[in-house]
Length: 456
Image 1 (cartoon, rainbow, N blue to C red):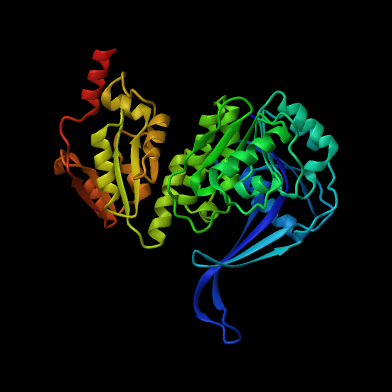
Image 2: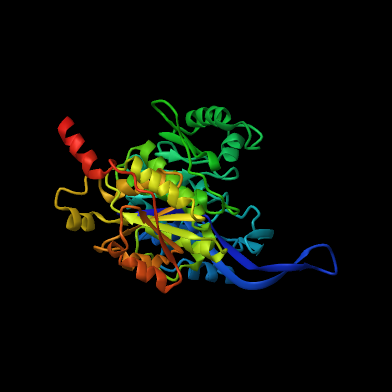
C-alpha cells in the first residue's frame, strides 16, 4: 500500500532536565539539562508514526536548505522525502521541560512564509498514492492550485484524511474525512475557538463545516471526550475515549489521523475506523506520547498495540510506579476475566495483558480455537478501563514476553498452583513477585463456548 503524507514540516526540539532551584536573577526555575532531542513535527510526525507502524511512507513537503532542515532530514530517517523549496527558514519549536512539566516554549520562523515550490515529482507521488494524509500547518503548501487539483482527483478514488489548520486552506471537496479538533472546528465555523460547549457545540460546528467543505465526513476530536463523527449521510456518532492521564498531549492528533487513514485504506468503515483512531491516540498518550517515541532506537518490529504496551510499562517504571501483568488467551471475555483483570489492576499503577496470539492458542487449545481472533481480543481487552496495554506473544509460554516487559507483579487466577507457573522463577530474577487473585468457578471460556454451541 502506497501511503503518502503531504503537508508542512516543523523541527521540534525538546530540552529536558530537572529543576531543583530558582534562579537568583528572577523567580524562575533553573533547569539542569539532561538531554536535547530533535524530532520531526507537523506532517513529519505523521510520517514518522506511519513508518514506526512498519509502513513504507512517502512525505511530500517543502524544505529549506538551512541547518534545521538538515536536522529534519536526519529525524525523518526511514521516510522517503520528496520536497520542493520552502523559500523560508525552517520553523522550529523548542520546548523546555523540567521532568514531565513543560516550562516554556520558543517558536522560531513560525510566521507566514512565502508560497513554497510544488514540483512535478511531488505531484506524481500524489497521483500514485493509495491513501493520503494531509497535515496542514498553515504554511501555504495546501493552497497551491496544482497540488489541490491532484488531491481532489486522488480523493475521488482513494481515501484522503485532511487534518486542517485555522491558518491553512480549506480541504478539497470529496475527502474521506476532515479531522479538526474542537477549538479548530469552532474557529473554522465562525466561533471563538475557545473549545467550550462540548458535544452540542461540536455537532453544530461539524454540520456547518460538512456543508462548507463538501467532505464525506467531519470528525471532530474532543480530547478526553473522544471524537464526534458526522458522516455526510447518517446519524452523528460520539466515540468515547478511554481515561488517560497525560500531561503532554502533543502528537495525539497526528496519531489519530495516521491510524484513521490506515483503517480507511484497509476498507474499514468510517465509524469503526474512528474508534481505532481514538484508541490509538489514547494509547499513544498513555505510553508517554512523543517523549516515548523519541526513546525508540529503530523501526518497530512489533504490532503498534504491543509497542505501546511496552512503552507504557517503561514510562510507569521510570516514574517509580508499579507495573502489573497478567496473561492468557482471553478467548470469549466473561465475568470471571473481568473480575480477575480488575483485581490485578488494583495492585499497581499499570496493567499489561500478555496475550497468546492466534497461532499460540491453536497449539494450546486445538484447531477450533481461538473463537475470536487476536486483533478483536486485543481491542476488547483495551476497551476495559482496567487494562492499560496488551502485549501479544507467539510462543507457547509467556516467558519471552515477560522478559521484555519485566513487570513488578505477575498475577494469575487462584485456580493455578505454584507448580503450574514456571514463569514465577523468571519473575523473581528481576525482583518481581507472582501472586494470585480469587478464582470464580462456573465462569470459563469452555463452558461459555459449549453454551453458545447449544444455542446455535
